[in-house]
Image (cartoon, rainbow, N blue to C red; front, side):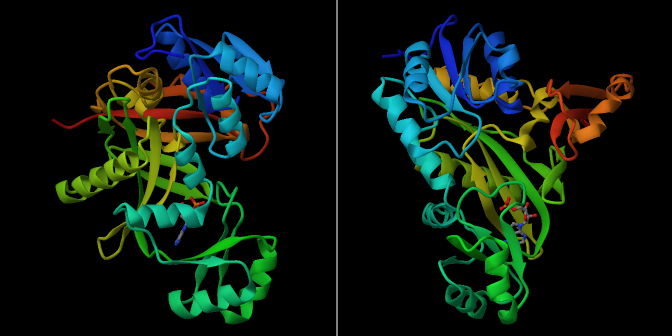
Length: 361
Ligand code: AMP
């Protein structure tokens, strides 16, 4: 059994081989840890910066056993880790952080919203959907248009469609594949904000200043942080983040997406039980970035300061935009992060750039 705090030289296991795994591995290496990545992808961008790789499917019991043996703590870089995988890792003696509960809640939009409202983190009104009749009943209660999302496995705007009217209900259900779903009331938001927060093994919670997010075609385009918020709004955001992390007995970094409504109210859209794209600005904008913070939390180290050092505009480099690396590297105020992915398919997250401006005194 691992003893916390983990000493340098310990091994951190990561499920998933994408850019979040890569940046976790870089942060872990800086603190003296080795990283073992489990991923089914042979060409994984995280594996190329890790001490060890296990190339296998996530549900391969032999691979899970060898990861559990190699790692003093296991974490993940995506939230759709099947519950059975965490059970097996635990059965093989691994410590998994964040835990099974956070994963289970985050994987199902109905469970997630039910949990959030229960812990004092308000969301839009919603209706669980298993039939066209449920959509019609939901429209009666929530009004139209309303947003129909698959309960599970939607991301970057996939698996969701607007239901414009009662007449559109059956077609909308077809559009998302006639699967268990949720119908959400439309949030009339002024801004989309997010907060990256962390909870340590001792229960301490810290939060970074919130960021303001802009999406294009359902994908994050840019985050500006720290966002301009009143002291009252900031306090509300920090309270919501602390309620979520504490209620889940969470260990690690979490991204919480928020809507600031036209009428000033704040609603939680969803949370991701992992490091988050809207927290990439912390890599160059904060004393301790979200990746190091996550490693500190799961290793049982003290959490680091979340103090901002600069205003950052983080812009994702999607597909061929990453080909501009040379020009970006020549911008004095830009910090370029490239994920080492080969194929710059349109829309693929290839890297990001953080453009820094001094904080006014
Ligand atoms: P999600 O997959 O839940 O993160 O949703 C993707 C994006 O769709 C969000 O960032 C919002 O821009 C928009 N969105 C999600 N839910 C709602 C809602 N209930 N009302 C209005 N817009 C929404």
